[in-house]
Image 1 (cartoon, rainbow, N blue to C red):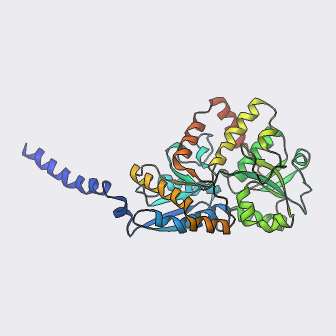
Image 2: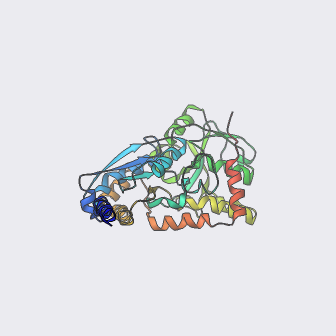
Length: 346
């Protein structure tokens, strides 16, 4: 009995600091700390711009006002960052990430390299309910409208297997018979844009319209690019005359595949935290994120940068991801097979 009591006292001495830390008020926990924000792309692209402006303002909305420190971790269309956040980053609320909107579905489709379960991330929120586009470089592509892709090849740049730049053209090719040839390996969208200017590629597919407007307004003004098709479940008000991918589906199966693929657009600019973070801290981060989205100074800066802000709360993202994983298995398998097709340039 004496041994048991001694063991009990020892266990209590071990657990008390742990329980105390878990019960710590958010302001006390975050005060004097850094919150690392891992951006899964190189500097200068759309995800990077969104991540950095959110980081600048989010600190004041987190109790204790920790420093939010941006760290770029590009690679494989943000798959490297997603794997790190899920498996390595601290699970105490001091690490968040900005990743490709399609990352959530990689495990669902059985794509290689995904070392996580998309439903188990803690989704913090999205800064934008996104519409993406496919564009052609006007000077060299010879592609002026979407129908041209059915008869002419267009080389497009990709940033990694999990990224929209790779997945979207692959699916559109398979479902509708377009002739986009994918060249992969660019660190981020900024490098794909440079490749278009240099003539290495002739277009880009899976490019957020908000990013086009914020980072390449001059290209639009000078008509250097042609916007060929919108990739989402509904049209953007800016693009009433550009066809919507959902309207190009010819069968019910094609519609279901496109719905499964483009549901991710609601996760336009997703911010997420690792699994296992205490629920009260996830609640704090989600509230801080949405408070940032309403912050007048933040909105003024976003407007200055021409960033669209149509915020989606984290709990809504969590539900969307779960619903995608509940899609009928035959449609999921067929969609996953399309995504896994390796049509990359040799």
